[in-house]
Image 1 (cartoon, one colour):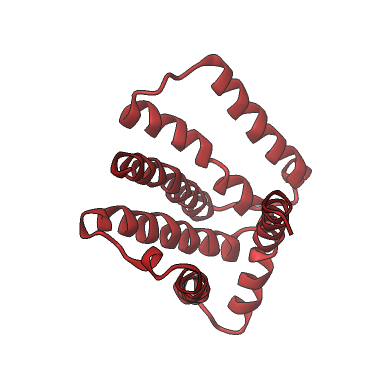
Image 2: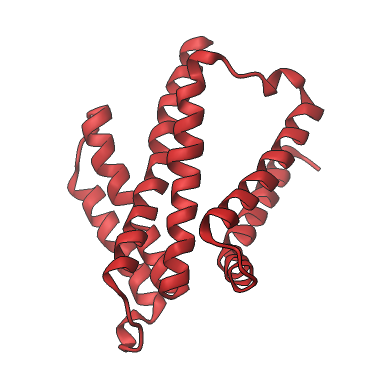
Length: 183
C-alpha cells in the first residue's frame, strides 16, 4: 500500500475511533470507572501502542531530550489528560451532543491563545469560520429541541474540555517550532 493510501486510511480510522470514544466512556462509566480512570486506561493503551509502533520502526524515535520535556508534559497532562477528564465528566452529567459542542469551543481558545502567544492576526474571516463551525455543531445536536437539560457544572466542565483540547494545538506549535530549529 502506498503512503497516500495509508494516510487516507489512517485518517478514516482516527475519525472512526474518535467517533466511538463517547460510547466507550459511557460503557466504562456504567461499570464503575470514573473520568480519571477512563482517561488513564485510554492513555495507557494509546501510549503502549505508540511505543511499540515507534520502537519497532526506529528506537531513536523513543528518546526525549530533557529540554523538550515541558512540551511533552504540557501536551500529555494539561492537554490530553485534562481534556479527556473534563470531556468524560461532561458526558456523565450532560448528553454526548452537549459534551461535543462544548469540546468544540477549542477553536475559539486556539484563536485567542495564538493571538496572545504567537501574535497571529484575529481576522474577520477567522471569526466567521468560528461562528459557522459552532453554529453547525449546535444545529446537528438537536439542542434546540428543548429536551436537553444542561447544568452550570456541565457547561463549566465542557468548556474546560475545550480549553484543554485547544492546548494540544498550542503545545504542538511550540514543539513543531522546536523540531524545525533542531534541523
